[in-house]
Length: 373
Image (cartoon, rainbow, N blue to C red):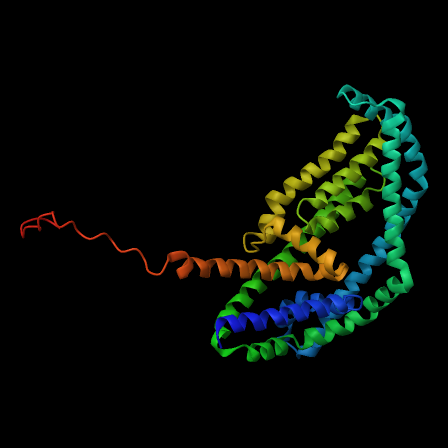
């Protein structure tokens, strides 16, 4: 079979898989989540399998994993619940403080820059923007809760995900061996090398970046609470959870915390500076300690490539697309590097034949036997 026909067949297969995922994206969340749990726990289960049967190791690992997840939820959900409703209660007061103090400062600053601020234009623009943001939030909530889909997804996530994770984790090595047996014999070795590289990149990113997010979330939540910032725990958890998107977690956390600090510590620049210092220390910790030790150089995923993959997956497939974006992005990065290496070895880059050294000029006299080399 020619290379062109192989490319056509594989392209048709990838398009068919993408179309199937798009059509079934509403019910795929527990299956994708179960696959992610199984992939995450497989290395530890392999080590435990040396001392007991595979099904026993699988059961123990899943029980421990879901017990830890349940304990974390039981500890954090009540606190987050209280902070969210506390924020809702204080929101009218914050809006009033913004109108009385922050908005006049904004008008003065814009007037100093030469912008026209008369007639309440700035106030009207801010109110219009706030209304648009509120409308977007309400619309998102309506879509999320439409038709009871949120309840169905939550129930399926709670009850179906553990079952899917158990069977996938128990049969993980068997599935890998079966897929390996289906590889085209002519290209099997190359596909194995690519699959190994994808596994290295994906495993390093998921486990390493997950650890970075957990440490950063704990640091931000504890540090913001210690400096006395209201809702610091909630803001820190949000900043930590979205830190898997490069730079976005720290930026969102900084904006939220500084906004809260300005509202809470109006005129207390020391407290406001401490809040900003928390994120400065967090970025230093992430860049110089966490990322080098937990991620290192083995991941090889550029931050822009990760952000593009996450946004594209979310736009095409929703939350399921966000979950699938990381493995697809990792595989895409490995394939691009593989294609680039092949291009540098191909005739398309080198030409039909390598350049030969220029022939000796006929006017040059032949070397005498006594001349050196």
